[in-house]
Image 1: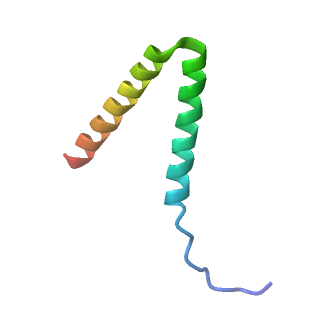
Image 2: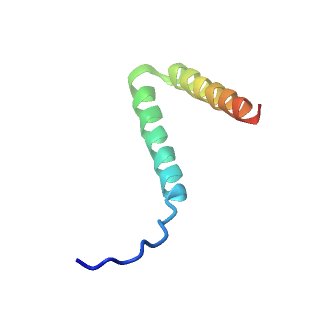
Image 3: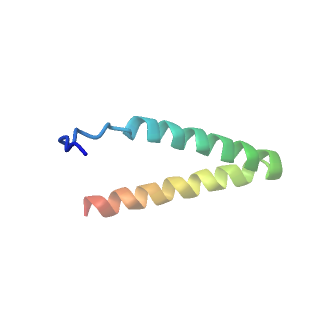
Length: 60
């Protein structure tokens, strides 16, 4: 077996963020179809609150 030096790992950050957005879109759409717009808005507000808390915690 030949030993080759390891290369640099590719940066998949953009692809991961795009897929996160796609997954949020279909989850919101399915929730909207099943329960209406109010639960979608509440879920979005809850996720926004959690992201804000995480950002504040990382700054501290």
